[in-house]
Image 1 (cartoon, rainbow, N blue to C red):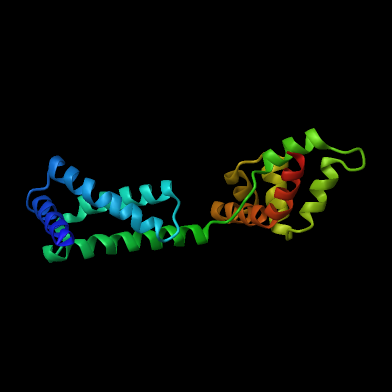
Image 2 (tube, helix red, strand yellow; image 1 turned 90 degrees about the vertical axis):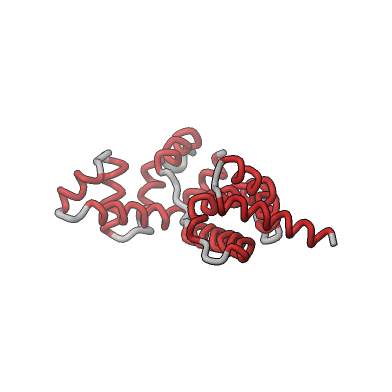
Length: 186
């Protein structure tokens, strides 16, 4: 009985918002559905802060796209479909993230932790052996010679995006080695 009353109340608040969207009607909708959305995300492994962020993202989408709902009786299903899509986008973005290392940070730490047996220049040359010739050249010009991307592109007659891609790939390849050094230097 209580569940039916709750669903009826949710439906009434949703209908009120859909008929006359306003700050007050959206605030009522947000109070009811935001905690439910956060719980939805939490049960799917999201940390509390992420769950709340995703819930707010979903509610913003609902606010912006409420006029697009076809069957108002299916508001709750529509809302949670938006939530599922938001979660899929989040995990998709997370899966595409690649760990890179800021080479400038590594150089600063190397200066602080240089051992007499090795020099930063020696270490740098050792790491550069992991890269192909194009990536080595891009890294050398970008981080040793301090050239800007557009200068490297002009000097080699290649698109700037190619230069950026080579630097990105080089950082991606070097990340496992440099993060190990940064952890030991910390």
